[in-house]
Image (cartoon, rainbow, N blue to C red; front, side, top):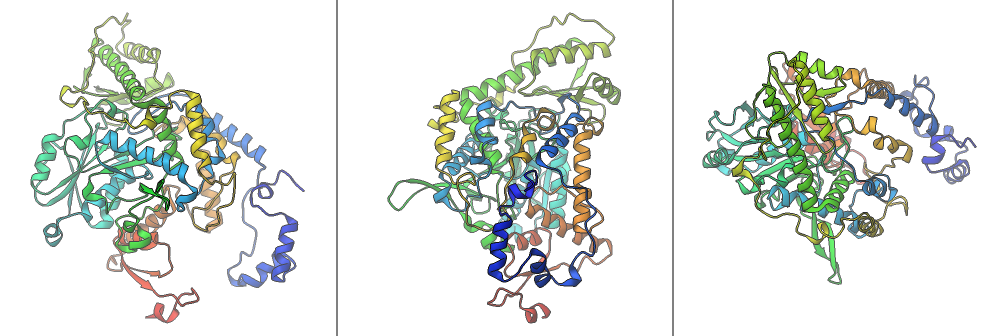
Length: 629
């Protein structure tokens, strides 16, 4: 037996077991089984043009070679992605623990009480920090979370707004560009007219059903949106806010100044950047939206004996029940990463999170003071972690820093932004200032006064948060490990047993496939890093795209969708756009079998298609007569 063969270790059956199964069905080989079941006219006539498979050891070495091609640089790019310190007890006991990373989607509450408690902790973090009463057990990423919020507000229009086809949605121009891109795509499918502009100068009229703003803006400014929200609400428009969880430990939460929905990412809570993901996004909302909030919601309940128990709640709004009438095609959650973020909050607690946030802000304030001292023109009057200057030669400055193996943000023409995170040291701040001094052709001792805070005084947080005992008992490594283990014992994962449920989410990530998540040159890589600094990642991505193109027989492959449901939505949007490009936009009917997964009709509806259901026979086969009709 070739013990280096990946399939022997992970597919789950050996030659003897295969022979036993073949005997039961009356076949003498796998080839004869294929011959009897797979029509000749759809079989490949020749082998796939793919390289030889590597053993697990060879794969690890190959990944190490690719990782070495990703340069080790210091990133201050921000834009929704930040360096973060993953506490070792969480890395070893959650991320690298099969009791957590092989756990199945928690459809059966009885065998998932530990995970459900960790996810309830996650929801509590989101509700407490955003100041909104309801949160779900995570979404896919911040961009798609913005899209989900817009869809929620569309579906929640008043009867008069729907009757009058009120379809305008305001997008603040300070939103992260990746979020704007997702909103533009989703708006096209839903027939929404996006209006992108300055939140202070754009007039929100009765033609708008909603708006979204960024708290904190992409350039770092902390804006007060109270007046904007009041004006929007006065004409019946509701407001969603993309926000930063860590900043909300110091700033007034959106729920306290009138926001209906808050979204963002929990990546800052101990989850590596990983060149863009995956990360667990979040969404919180008021009670008015509990029937349309997407994804999983964990609720507190009782078992048949009256004991405390957890379950997934409010599922009647989900696409597997509402199908094409659902508000979202999201059918899962980033559970492992949401669990990591929740344990990060459990480990640090309120005081620890505020300390981390204070340290970040203090270092940003020192940087601001140093740049002011050097004579640079600063743009942010108030900020949390991002300092921005106006310069004429922004491209040249970006290059100067790149030569020092430092990446600063020059994405806005004529401006340079520097975002401080949990990993930034005092030495890093003065390294940045010394480069800026060189740019100014000066040597400096950097003796200057620093303001205590650049947080706006009218937005300082006064409300309490994370008061539940779970966030106040486990601040030592020993207590945290014991808590993690207690929850793990209440769960069933593949390290204990097979879960006898079939689903698109039943899969096993081999340990070898997860090792690189903890490697610095894989995990600590910002997604907007210049491509010439991440040759390893670029090679990995290109190879996978090429392999998948060969396997599927298509000309090219996109790896952009980050779930099966997002993939089918992307495919349907491509089909819709194809017909529109030919002047055949009226061809908008999607035939979907009655037996299809609930995400299928939901995705079609989101893509602006009319869903026509094709019936199934009692045998489960498609009713061909109904299909022809």
